Length: 354
Image 1 (tube, helix red, strand yellow):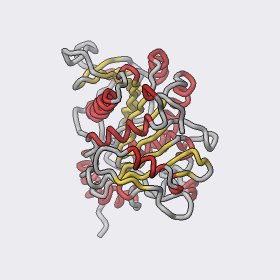
Image 2: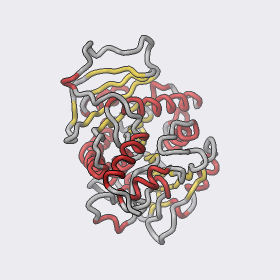
Image 3: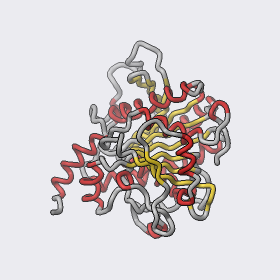
């Protein structure tokens, strides 16, 4: 039986809203807190995250302000200011994080903050100074009842806002490894930023990690190149590595996404390979990442993207430990993102893209 649009909207708003970590109503620059933009905590933040905020029309909100939440200081500004701040800081790694559907500014901070803190702690265990890490969040207006509208908006933002941002980062912070991390529709946004117009194998990021991506399972196949929405066949050629974390315990993607989009989801089933109809190489994740097993998966023929053998795609089956659509804030996921960021690096987490 096919679910009605009303029931689908209800399920998606409640369940994919679980990826949203629902919070307060959206903030707007004209609607700042009553007090000046002072920190809301009394202790120094453990990390800082620059934020690019976009409204319902995908326009940037550029009024500068700061907010502290659970040990993370969020600095809001337009993308030119963010790029210049990172250029001045010269980080070894820049993590660009995109949230999913039904998020407002407050819940976007909650989501981003958990990833930032997890990655900071993981870096510390490798002896990397958190000051050598840069974080950028894309907080976009994803609170739309109709899922398709948010899906289209994610693609527009990825292609028109984030892709140019990646180009500017490459110019102004050339020594940094840029790692894209997208959850749910944030994964769609990330793939759109990689798929946007440009040379077929132009490197835009060191790695992209998709967490329970709300994307069609066949989105990377060549035949999706003519799709109006939902096809990203050029994305694997623009990054050294795509890590697709999926879980068959993700009932939101199985029930809601499949019914809404008429396709199995990349974030539940894993990605099909671009040629031959095979699956990309798969690593099963049941705890902290085994680097030997990860390298083994990446060295399989099915991990190499046709047309650019130095580009890799690997499925990570996290079914045993990712128990739901938003159950991603766990040590093995932080470890996986960090290993994707530092793969091929020498001391201090720096190194050339493999």
